[in-house]
Amino acid sequence: MAASPTPVAPVRSLDAWIAENVELLQPDRVVWVDGSRGQLDALLHEMVEEGRIIRLNPEHRPYSFLARSDPDDVARVEARTFICSENEADAGPTNNWRDPDAMRAELRDLFAGAMRGRTMYVVPFSMGPVGGALSRYGVQLTDSAYVVASMSIMTRVGETVLERIRAGARWVAALHSVGAPLEPGQDDVPWPSSPTKYICHFPEAREIISFGSAYGGNAILAKKAFALRIASVMARDEGWLAEHMLLLRVTDPKGRRFHIAAAFPSACGKTNFAMLRSSLPGWEVETLGDDIAWLAPGSDGRLRAINPEAGFFGVAPGTGYGTNPTAIDTLWGNTIFTNVALRPDGDVWWEGLTPTPPEGLVDWRGEPWSPDAGAPAAHPNSRFCVSAAQCPSIAPDWDDPNGVPIDAIIFGGRRASNVPLVVEARDWEHGVFLGATIASERTAAAEGQVGELRRDPFAMLPFCGYNMGDYMQHWLEVGQRLRRTGGVPAVYQVNWFRKDADGSWLWPGFSENGRVLAWIIERIAGEAAASDTPLGKVPAVGAIEYREAGVTDEQWQELFRIDERALLAEADDTAAFLDGFGDRLPEAVRRQLGGLRERLEQSAGLSRRAVA
Image (cartoon, rainbow, N blue to C red; front, side, top):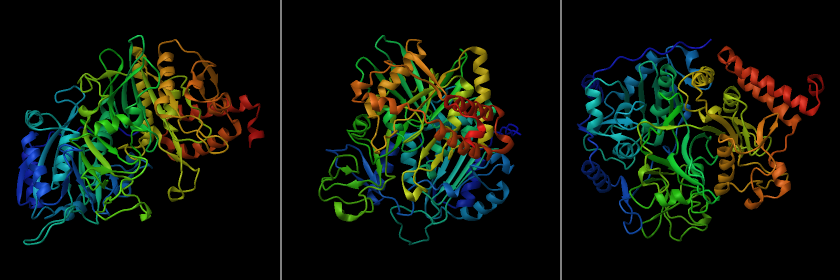
């Protein structure tokens, strides 16, 4: 049984909300963030003077800074992230749930006096270009200057947003505190935070409350908290999609433009694909967004998408000229780095930036570092925060409020076996099934049993703000609406990470992924051949020039080899995962799993009894 739509929260009074929180939090002063360069410059200068951030050598990184977090505040804390829906079933089995009234009472006690000795910043922001049809507004209260600086890069902040809100536009309330009040005369620390952490989402009220962390999505509440968890509920109720997707524009040698939205779980090459430099001559790839996309049926009947963010908050380690030269060129200046290493010359470094580390590094904790230290110089989750407009591959109209029409949606995971390099879905329903069953294989014992599948439907498992069974049904309903207007995008699944029996990569990835993207584009244009398999359509012989990518005939065959018995065993694992959604799982998804089993059994000449 699906949840009924969430009642739309009433337009709250901004001034009353702020006054209530000033009384509760007891800040020393209140500062309204106006979005001006002068105010941001003064804030960054103050942070440098107070020792909260380090200004990097302007000869290497003009107007760039390094922040070092508390060692206990370095990443999203999913175990402390809650969906506080009125009905526990509406949060679903993949979310942590708390009763909203009980959670508010606990949070109120934590927030009482939490900003004593600190400044409360009022940050009005827009997700998407101000005034756009799909743009949405929010106001974040925070006592972290680092968060204000990051929000100023990641969103559109300032007076124009405030004007919209005061004119009656609905907005999401986002309250944040590091949870470290200062008593008179008490010395502060460069990165205040609290051992007690909560990131709470109230979907009915369209509200976010975060306590104790100053890091990333825990504290920059416009990002995952608003743009995905709360926005996914808004999207369900309003008939659109809020997705953990990159956006690309591809121009083929004939000058035709195509637009792609793609969802990849973590460690699956998402940023590299967002900034792809194709190895194929004559193909141009432009970046529209690297992480989040909002997609809605347009007046033309097609699915259109915007990037609601204004900046990139990317993982630094593993990013280098060999893997993502566009990202490196983006970071030439005007960037806030967090938890990377510092070079003696005042520039930054992280693992993967260069083949060998420079001498004399200071690690992310501020300690001298050498290659025999036994730990990385940069934290594995260290970050860069930079304006999207600074990316060399950014499309000139990347922030067009009308968005772009989506021609194809791609889902990808990290699979050493079973999943081919690329598969085309038979139709939208089959594409929803592919998205619902995306998984990656665990690569380290710390994550669980090596080789065990880590399910991440639609790459949204940590970010869907409601029951994911209902979320799958919503995808099906969006497709039904698009089908009536003839605007259904094609759907694909890709896997850059398949290995041979010796554990070697079968596909070179990176720029060569442009060959797969070109085949997808040519399929959309009706110009590329495909062969049918039990999993979907794959490139026909000769459709991709794989030898030019250094791939042998044997490797190419292995990239698409179907092991029916292994896939049938995986289908049982998939069924067990889907059964966890109970009666909220759409019958269409169950039907697709049954169809997959039948095709695999037919392909192998097996009966159900023989398989059992």
